Length: 305
Image (tube, rainbow, N blue to C red; front, top):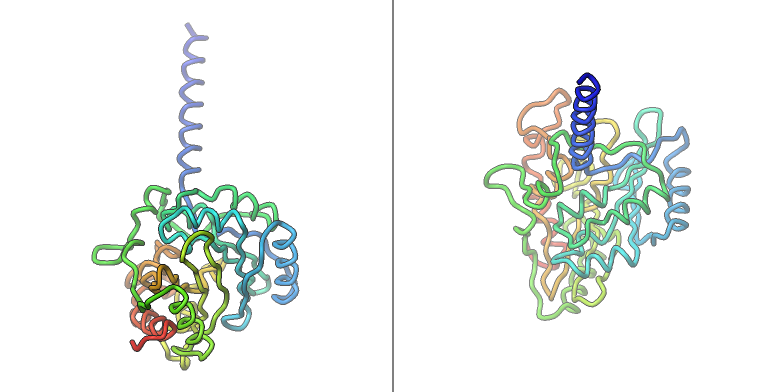
């Protein structure tokens, strides 16, 4: 009888343990801390690019949005193939890697492909890309959310009522052809319209669809659209979430689109409070930014805001 009781208790314990583990595995975070170093941003960034190239990724663009931070954007054939199978899959065709000086250490962080695949409603869960990034850069811990979001949650995510979902994009500009649209966007970015600059471009195979990374430089320090303006107000936790950058314009079938900032920012800070926090990081502190970002991206698409 005692033996049976022990077996029953053990079985119950194992069920609870495995169920708890499965639940924990279902919780997704937007970012992965690959590691930290005492070396400079430039030194670490060079090492990271070498590891990414050696790990099967193509570096398609990079930029420094502000002092102490360098962003590297990568893709590969598997990511582009997954994007080709997904509606507006171009958003998931890139992985963003940040190298950020935070106090006395330099952090290397990358976007979690599994999280982004769910947020962008990709046809693939991108778990193979996650493993590939881990192999190239390592993975100390996932971070960036206190909301316990699962893939199912992310596929229908919006921050709160009256705020946009993934499938509520901003339509920036419309042209007669994909070729004309791409030329208009690239010409506008080259001219710096909207205080923007091009970071990268990835063309999706088999589709008239491309994603273009856009640096938002801001016209001055008070420009609410600027990368530094926004990140200086909300990216206060450790590790830093610099891999949020850059924003994207997706050109699909002759129309330029962007995710509304109220969605694009929220998926990377789903726990960011609206009005009060210990650090001062709130959506209220960047209340002017969603509209300013949209106006900058409209200009970058060749239209008047």
